[in-house]
Length: 327
Image 1 (tube, rainbow, N blue to C red):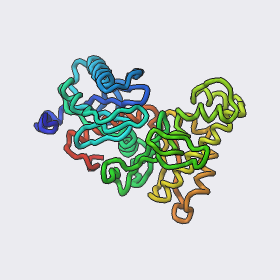
Image 2 (cartoon, rainbow, N blue to C red; image 1 turned 90 degrees about the horizontal axis):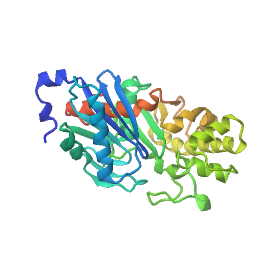
Image 3 (cartoon, one colour; image 1 turned 180 degrees about the horizontal axis):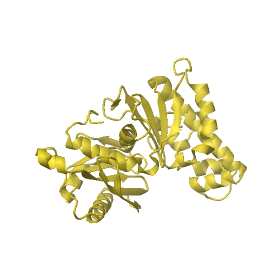
Image 4 (cartoon, rainbow, N blue to C red; image 1 turned 60 degrees about the vertical axis):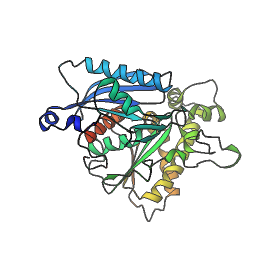
């Protein structure tokens, strides 16, 4: 199906004010319906326990149909879906997710066939950056770095008002900047040792906690609660989080010279616990004369950045402009 041709009639495009959006994560799925003003009309969350391609796509289809059924009088114009990992947006292919083992899934075509609407995909972090640019704290910022810290770590770059895609569409993979070297460097599923993702993601925080003397098997959210109650191992865990993220972000700032660094993802909810260590580390790792006024803050879009990013993809796709001109 020619996705753009399906929406080529001017009158249809003007009436199509809503899109279906799916934000696919490592352990959960968000599905929603959004309008062009950035209002999420429906926001439903589902667990993802089976990441095999067929099962995962069936779950996405089921969720989108459920969301659409809540507004029977509304006819969505398209589908936007964000995927964790590498995406070939032009072909609609989910190329790879290193932590799940997914490889070369033609997810856009599968969604189009199942639901009957044009579908557009992009890496979830790049999509979040689109949403931040259109609806968040970077509406007037042409150069910024968006970093998600969740089950994995990813980044996206806006430069001169445009989303930087890179030669193969994968610019911004800050999660695979090396932040630990030597004997303590863990093996990342990407094949390298010491990546930020394997040491500082939400999945890594519990291991860091145990290595720093913590007991039991709490998750990152519980470790944040423990830190706020004064647990010394938990406090040290979040200080380490700031140091590790500061190393990765510092390298990116030196290369990209952004005006802002925006942090999203579930771990950003604990920003207050690692902010000081992050700022201190960033200050010692960047070339300060070249980056005298770079700012750092958590995203104001919170948990809706992914859905808003997916919605941006659908609207960009409708306008047949995948290079950033719509935003």
